[in-house]
Image 1 (cartoon, rainbow, N blue to C red):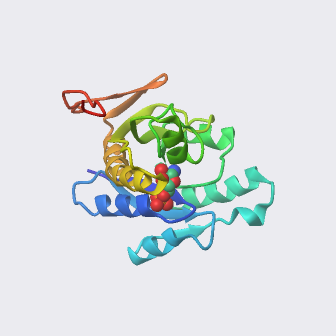
Image 2: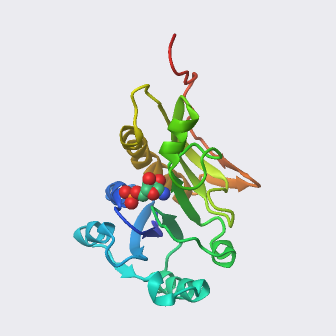
Length: 217
Ligand code: GRF
């Protein structure tokens, strides 16, 4: 089985990158991380990648000013050089143009720390707490030009506790992110995900029985 060549794009901490690296160490995992790209030279995730012996590239957006297409051409060159087949955005904090996104249609994933389509954008945990939702979580989806939209591959949920603050809720959601991103990439890389309009169909995807009702009376 040939493993899909994946680039992980980061801007910061890199904990999802670390989860993907761990998963890709498994002999039967259908993807390998061929390249890690950061748009910030100081991103902590770069050290995680280097420590794992992965190829890293910095494409510093600041060097391109407001010229997004030029930034993306530089990015694209790196992806081509490494023969990248799939792109995973993992805390990548640059908006990508529609042209770039469309070029990677069906081949670019993102992880968002909320149960989409709720809480698109930033500060998802604070907004979830403010809204009083009882269930929150994270979503892996294909990237389309509209931010935090696109066919959903996988979601994971957590119960919101009455004493949660942004940090405690974020920590539990992050633990879920670290499970679902490697799992979703596995499904996509092994060809088990078919995109049909706005929806993903997963062949042989196991769906647990039951409901997730919070709180219990
Ligand atoms: C994660 O919460 C992810 O969902 C969001 O950005 C954060 C990145 O964290 N898109 P890390 O860099 O993977 O630790």
